[in-house]
Image (cartoon, rainbow, N blue to C red; front, side, top):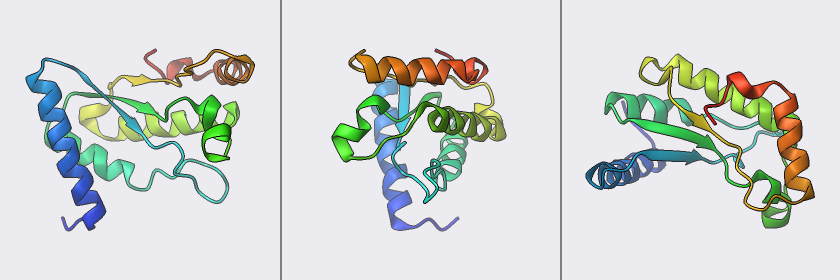
Length: 138
């Protein structure tokens, strides 16, 4: 399979990161970029399946997370993702994980919120209200 140089670089970085975690006796939770968005603001998962297949081919025991502190996106990058969209994005990631046999039961964590202020609580409450419990491990 011929990969673009960006994906090849990501694969090499993942190999190094996984090997480090494995040698240190740690379990890797890999965070995927939730800010990679399509014009309709849905999560752009175009490279995710390739990454999952690559990782599965290497038999990397990885848990997954989508994004980091989505409640702070607006202040950090001037872009927001609401709880409805975030829930849809997590469901999409769960579907991708289930499509790769090695990861069909992989743990999926998130969303995390570093500062439980009003906007974080609203985001997490809305996310939870959308019935995403079946999607997440924690």
